[in-house]
View 1: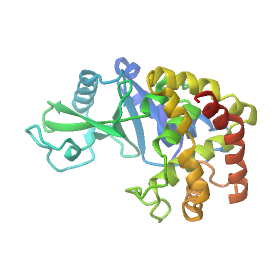
View 2 (view 1 turned 60 degrees about the vertical axis):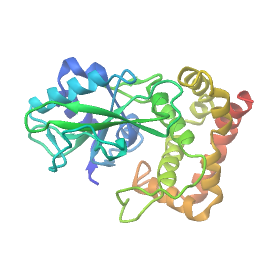
View 3 (view 1 turned 135 degrees about the horizontal axis):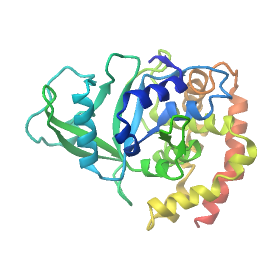
Length: 299
């Protein structure tokens, strides 16, 4: 993990990424959230080293292939030195995600993600991509997370014209990604600690709600409903009724909630001294003004 200035990374992306290809990408994750709340964060850097870049439109393997091959020709380099399989392999989960450093810098790297198609049921679906570039040829995997499409709705535009996921839409994607606390942990420790994936993702939801104005949070229900109907035209009611189940489970689990609080203190809410009680109050407001109305509408 490294501390990165989100404004600087967006500017580097704008300079490093070929201009004609920028319309095919948008940024999500902690970098996008930190950029959006940069004024409230008092110039704090974000603890990350990767820029999660989503290739769109959904399922557009050709776009991803062309972008990756163009970047490799332009001097971008892979993180992994190991060779990649030259033959199509099964299971697809054995394929590696494409992660690239920009030319002349290792300050950050981009990780390629794909947009899911409507009504994707798998939590994560791998799309195999054959990259044909000198020294980098092989099969890679493009992960398409089930709820990532929600983050593509109502994208925002940065000062360098690169778009990014609206924080409340990324929050909805995280809320729906976890119905329980679960046992999955992060592959990389956070401030030296192994953290549950649900605690990290749902902790970010609470951080986003904390950084947002109360009246803005109260206005999330309508755009959430619109995004659900757009991305899940058949199952939006079922999903809407489930939104918040995982967050409630984390709140009811002292160990998981302590981890969620920890992730906010070393993440988006770094240096703000937010207590567990204050974070619970944020959760209460989120349920009362946004989640409960959404769930009621979806009955």
